Image (spheres, helix red, strand yellow):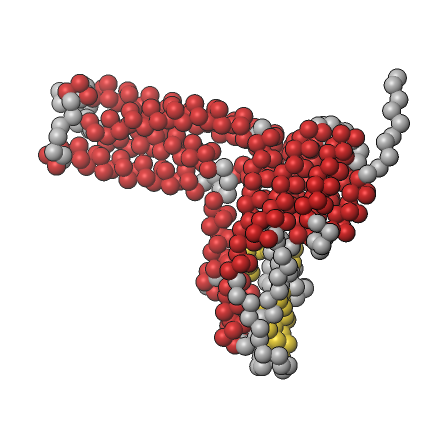
Length: 416
């Protein structure tokens, strides 16, 4: 049960749920079930409603109401199947052309989740209202749930507009410019978030003395670090006067055979304290962008690599990704004084710095130098970074070396 008390584990579960295709549609379905039961109850107790429905909205024919609900249910579930097929095609196309690591971006698309939920909720609502209709088809006065039938018609109209929107939305999601733009905006947003967070952090200077015991903490499972609860680590370190050194930052791969962190303390750690420290780290099967901002840059680097591969040969997509990488790096240079290195002696960990953010941008070089147009654009953007960073920036020399590697002599052009 200790793992369920871990805030890192709980946050990982929440993020996994957000990136699933089942949670939002399931919520819509449950809501539709509750709404169906509520409206059927109101139809059985119409005196509780202060105003009656207009006569033109009232359907007294049970057979017609049954056919209407049956038509709604069968049609909507058929459309939902078509939309699901469209989603699979879009995801397969994006994974094959832009990289499998981009699938998570499509899974987190809230518009897709809501569209599925709307259609499935309409189907569920119609089925449950149809079940509540009593009496034979030829009965003189069958029970016709007027309010529930009206709501079924409203949900049908909403489902039609949902289908129209989704047909427009699918091509938008696989538009390569929109994919790069979404990654670029999140890259810049996360960099601004890193800078703002560090402005509010209080760096504690622990008393300089030697702790008697050094303990290595290893995780129970291998995987990528997806969440790390630094608040818990800082709180436990202050309460017990520990010094914690974290050897692996979020986004890296760890296994039970390597030490995740080292704790210096005055006494041996109890089993409960060890479990608490392990519970501050949640791992998963894949690297994610949560607490690992450079991963967004890596995804754009992958797009650059695929765009400049012989099978695609799309330099414009590569240049677009470079533009968004450049925009994010400018945020790291200029936003509120830039992203500065940070150290916290109480809990020592490598915080993402400009050097880490520059790695994806530099990793594009082996691909951009193969295309003249993309290489020139990459060089221009690098020179722009040099100008904005200035000669006193810690990574100014690295930027100059990067520009030098891109400033290659023009190859001889032969016309055949």
